[in-house]
Length: 221
Image 1 (cartoon, rainbow, N blue to C red):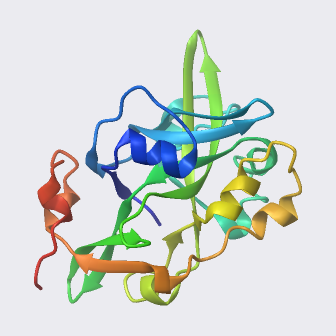
Image 2 (image 1 turned 90 degrees about the vertical axis):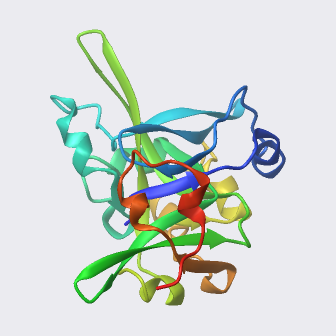
Image 3 (image 1 turned 60 degrees about the horizontal axis):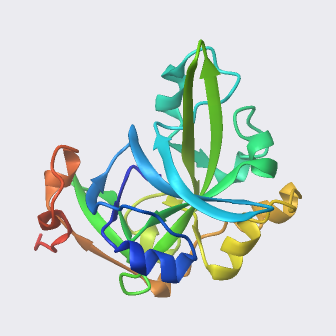
């Protein structure tokens, strides 16, 4: 799964890497569910960046918002079978911007958090889905992060990992003319473990009230 991640990169770096622009961007070292997160969507007019609630995803047919708490992640293997996600795979895909994420490894009777980086700490994107929920004048635009089987690196830490898309896959994922679910699901594969690194970090990351650069410093266990 993916329950926490970071984004400390500058807006200039994100613009150069992902070809999107934003007015403001505050670094965050402990992004957690219920927060607004930077995402990119594509349309026939190009791509644009904005903030979506990672609550997780609230389907447009939901009677209330409580269902979102169970949908911070979606399994890529069954995403085209679940009522909440199947139509979104064809028409409401997004990229979620990050520069690392956290996962917890069980060691004895405890869970030790690890920070995972991609391409030597470069900016990368998770595959996501989004939806718009409206009721009685209230509107929430929310999203979920897709997960897949772990690669060799992640398999030592957890039994799931977020779907990370490379440049070619990003272009396809944001292409509004691509609605073939079989072809889209082929993009949802484990990222190359040789391009990822992981190291243990402070358990302070368990508490979302902590949000500073000390969280990404390696520790000895």
